[in-house]
Length: 268
Image (cartoon, rainbow, N blue to C red; front, side, top):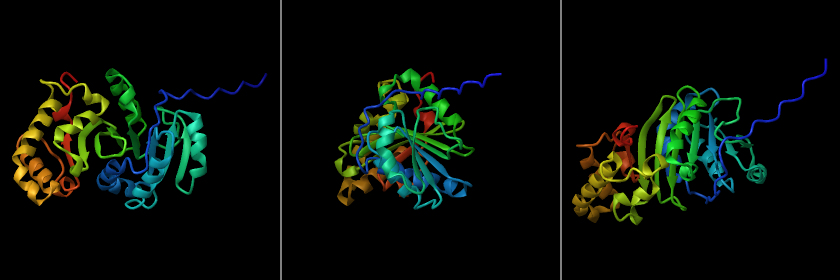
């Protein structure tokens, strides 16, 4: 009997992104991940994180490893890119705990990661494709794992992301460099794909940003104590009507996290 021909490698799932990236671009997302998911990473036998679609340069994967190891010293990071030339360019940056692989949404790793971070990846996709990508990525998570998917501007001043567990979406986080923010609704341009087309009257995310702007305006007297104090006061007022799940320490970082169910698109 002749030997069976080897099976050709599976084609990565997804399409090539623009690849735009900058050092320190994802610092706000990384800071939040370390604070909210650090304990789970420390408790894992082999804590693995994936930087999915890291782009034309490997900076975000390098930085993710450094930031995770401040809270989980055994953490390892694998950067996954669908463009093989980008993977080849990243390989010289490999080190202990940091590797790069060719792949896409299938996440071609033997181990299930505790964390998948997908930043600025889904913006080029259609809104009706997002749920299937989320489901596929969540299915690759280890028990207790976390998927963080969102969008930021080119230098990381404004960022919005969704956090998902194996069961689906949990929360939405808004984060900003407050000194450059005129009003909270400025973050609307960085809503992730699942929400950006829903920022219209009648949708929950539109109502949230409207209320946030009103709370920001009412908190104007606190600006005398700094933008952080104004933001914290505005978020405190929001808690009367919206399910904010974090507290003052995160607010002072220019963040607010709200339950996904309160902002989910109508009919979803």
